Image (cartoon, rainbow, N blue to C red; front, side, top):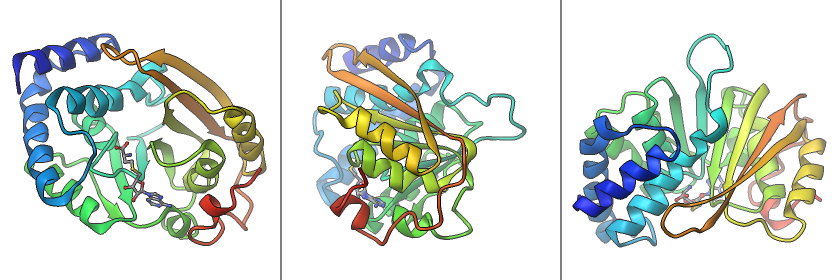
Amino acid sequence: MKAESRELLLSGAAELGLDVSAHMDRFARLLTLLQEGNSRLNLTALRTEQDIVLKHFVDSLSCLRGGILDNEGLDGELQVLDLGTGAGFPALPLAMVRPDLQMVPVDATRKKIEFVAATAQTLALSNVHPLVGRAETLGRDPAHRERYDRVVVRAVAALPVLMELALPLLKVGGLMVAQKGALQGDELDSGRRVAGMLGGVLEDALTFALPVSGDPRTLVCVRKVAPTPAGYPRREGVPARSPLS
Ligand code: SAH
């Protein structure tokens, strides 16, 4: 990793109150694996080293803002599902700096999960448990429905769609964290309304700017306060095709 990328990662993380200096070797290996994987598998649109470090690594770590992934006095390790992880974001950076989190990166695309699994193995991340599947299917499977303390989700869909995909997977008392750019029009209001239909309460929308680029970011936090009604999530593809409103 180039000196300026290291600096960017260290200072971006420091802004979050994190010292990632002990993890720099693993981040450098992740960068190499991603660049190699990208030329074979077309995993991510981000190609330059600076873009990957800022928009994948630093951005992924930003869901540690505000203590969102803290344990809140629960017994044991938090079970965290990363919905639509793609090439492993935010799951892999989070798992690196927070070995206490049990991380389950999920994606509908097998080749992406194969990459995440191989990468986790190379980096010796024993707290990463990748899974191929669709949120709609897992959300109806008793092995996964209402089993997770946190669902993190970055760049997958608009808020009302995310509510239907993510809330069924959360335990009552758990928290969904959606990493978004600037919110569109009434996205927050419709997200709040749909959360209410599915047992969630929109707790917080934290806005900040990504370092260097200044790109706007919003962390939308939704607490699950009641079980999700049995009819949700609807069939595969329906949540995105006809979002609840
Ligand atoms: N979170 C990653 C990838 C975003 S791209 C990042 O921020 O870089 C969105 C990913 O979500 C794709 O890989 C797609 O396969 C996955 N996805 C979309 N809908 C899904 C669903 N219903 N269930 C599981 N994965 C889904």
